[in-house]
Length: 242
Image (cartoon, rainbow, N blue to C red):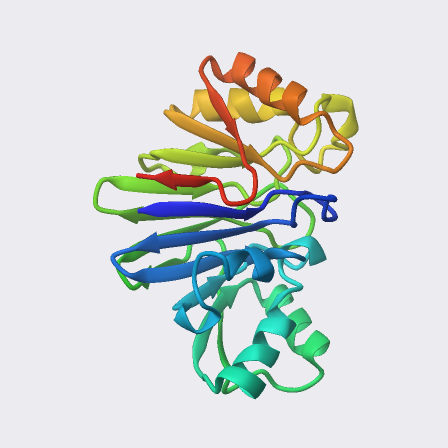
């Protein structure tokens, strides 16, 4: 299984980084996980748009999905493709149709996901877990054989990778701020992300969803100190091979 970072900025895109987005690939299956502003451009450096097999959205906050109306434009009016599965909480699916201004079917095939749901996405087994974040926000556990990726999406400290009750090879965890006091209980600090992943026995950790203006070097160091091992800062086009 392979994960490629398309964007790792939280709340809004930074000057050299798109918002949240990741390409997950396994056995020829290509999954776009979250699609924040700027991610479609970066995605096309790795795969043509019409080679996508599914889209997975974590929640309705705009830094995680607002490239989808543009993707619908591309599929409907240029690429001539229908029936792309788009999976996520009902709130984000509703926002998508409202933003597009017309029904997205048959271009997109929308499917609601909720806490505890499981899906087979080609060769990838998906589990969903509701996080500690306003609105209906889902974290995802994706596994294929012995490899497994866990993505925290957005969360406060009341949720953990432990909720999946399953092995994790790579944890991709938000660490929006350096200091606990700045999170407002809605996100994780660097130390909170590192501690949570360590307590969940995650062997490899990448931190993401960094708010522009935060000190990324300090966040990476603080997360590594709490995690007790090396931590990788998510940056556009960084690739993990599992």
